[in-house]
Image (tube, rainbow, N blue to C red; front, side, top):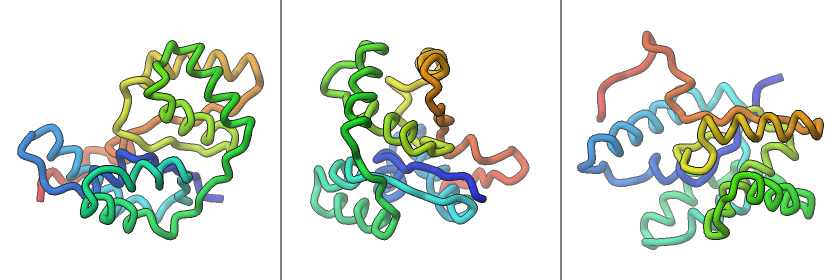
Length: 164
């Protein structure tokens, strides 16, 4: 059985964005493209309506590119339990209401036992936060997904350092 990867919105955003002038953003775009082209097929990829809705926001042309790249990816069902777990994470981590989507993505992964939550958004779900989630979930016998950026799937030997 292959590992599962949940794609949240930053992945199609970096994948389809016009090359950035900011070197850090450009590197993330390159790494995301490399992951998409060389690693994606090794995993069962899933997402949710939350990702689809977020991808549709903003500039219409960019929104179309984002939604086109995730078209056909299976969507996980959203339940009341996911909303409840998300609320618990918001309280546990003191996450502001305008960032609730971060905890919804996490709750979907937990509820569906998805191996990896693939994201570039580590503001609210970074390593220190994930330690707290690990403890919280362990105490409740809940699954703990691995929060990962696309670069975590490469080792130095196989990574292509070219930006274009």
